[in-house]
Length: 405
Image (tube, rainbow, N blue to C red; front, top):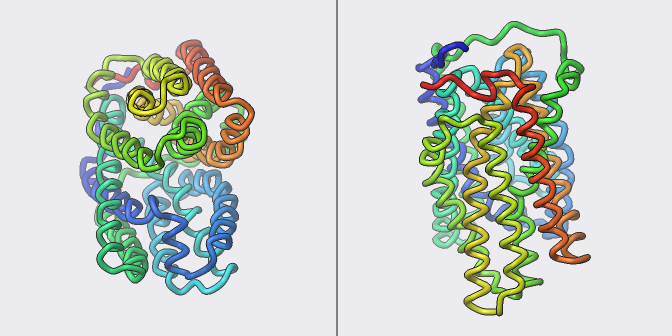
């Protein structure tokens, strides 16, 4: 095995600063997305919802296109392009006055958001190798969660002080954050790693890699579980358990705070573990979380039921913490450098697919029989864990068990 190394120390700090600023900007509007667009554009909420849905469908194509561009031009340039796209879009939001313009601007945001993940993942893979790559992924996850939470607080303060005008201020602040993130990456130009040699294999070679395709299928199960808190829990908690919607904000705040605070601790705990085994263990914990959510319906209404939801959310948070960094690192380690952009684009596409599948799928299962949702998710993630244990022998050794720093 090769020894772990940091390919470019000069590019790390500007990247992390830019990423923090980017996440701070996202935190300004993500918690209020539909309301934010409605207030800025003054379009009806139904029009806004339809426009955002159309834009999200357009964004599905961004991942595979970004993968090609990353392999051709390098991840840093594509990452800068995702920042600039969203800077232009948010600066243009206050000018939107119709459905067509809304789709164009929202599509720019969706494309930038979707392309960001394979670009940032590929850039980290170029900056660091081995155990140091895991550490850099951990720092990114921690900083993004902290920045996202700060952005949400800042957004709430601006809107409460400036009222409706505050939404336009948030749009311009977000645009400025993406410009600043672009500047950070531009200043790191001399320290940026050289792009890998081009490959002519394309996506055909990616899909011919059967162990990687199996890894993508495994990740799809995990991404669906990650959407429990934002998608499934609001419906389940309010319509099935009859708890106050206000509790959802508390649970979400607990989850994001613990994810931000616990990432480095969990990474330290996992540093001697195989990434496949760490992910499989996270799947077992997520299964326990699904069982806890299902069991909460058996508790009496009131404090006991609220306590059950809190306990289930804490278990789910631990599972998320244990899954995130090994998942990113194993995908990057599996990908050959010349096709890393395409590999990570397909891997990250699981989130886009889950975002399309989860709302309708979760709602259908809950309306049929609430326990069916938790049983389905537990079965999927349990099967994913078993597949991971078998994949450990078929994936590149450095991807499964990185050299220790």
